Image (cartoon, one colour):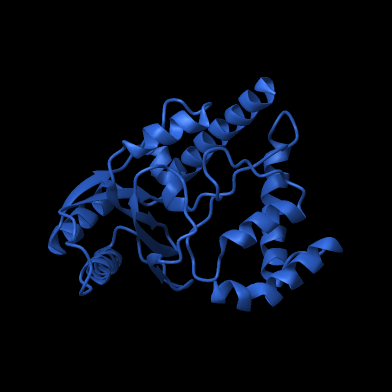
Length: 262
C-alpha cells in the first residue's frame, strides 16, 4: 500500500500526458514508434485494417506491462484481454503456442477459469536463441496468462554486432549452457525456498533453435541437476507468434460471445 502511495505522482503524470494525447512516458513513445511500424506492415499484408491486438513482449528489465498497455492506448489499438488480464510476455505466448495452459471452454470465462485450476503446474524455462542474443525466462506456469508478478527470473546475453560466429559453434553453445545453468541455480538454490522441482519444461524458440542447440540445452539442464521435458518444433521461431495469435483468437471469440449474450 505504501509503495502504491509513493507511486501516485508518477501515475498522475502519466495520466496527464495521456489526457493531452501524448505518450504516457518517453519509453511508451519509443515503443509506440516501433509498434506502429509493425502495425503498418501487418496492415499492408492483411485484407482489412488491424482492429484489435494482443501484444506479446519479452520480460526485459525496464519493460513494464503498463507501458505495453499504454502503447495500445496511444495508438488507439483496442487491446484484447479475454481470459488474460495482462498482455502476455513471451513465455506465456510460447506456452500457449506449444498447446499448454489452454482451456477448452474459452468462450465461457468462469468455466475456463475452473478448467485452468485443474491444469498441472510446470516449472518452465523459456529460451529464445537468435544470431544476436540469448534470452531466458523461468516461471511456474499453469494457465497461459500473465500475472502482475514483480518476481521475474531472467537471464540474457548479447553477442557483439561484429561477432560472426555460427550459432551452432561450440563457443556460442558453451555460452548458452552457462546461461541456462546459472539461471537454474540462481532460481532454485536460494535458502528458505521450497524444494526445487525435479522436472523442468523447456520451451525452445528462436530462428537458431536447431537439434544441435536442443542437445546443448538438454545437457545444460541435466548438468544443473534437473530432468528435462524439451519442447521444440519444426518452426520454433514462430512459436511465440503462434501462441499470441491463439490467445488473440480466444479473446476475440470471448468478446464476441459476451456481446451476443447482451
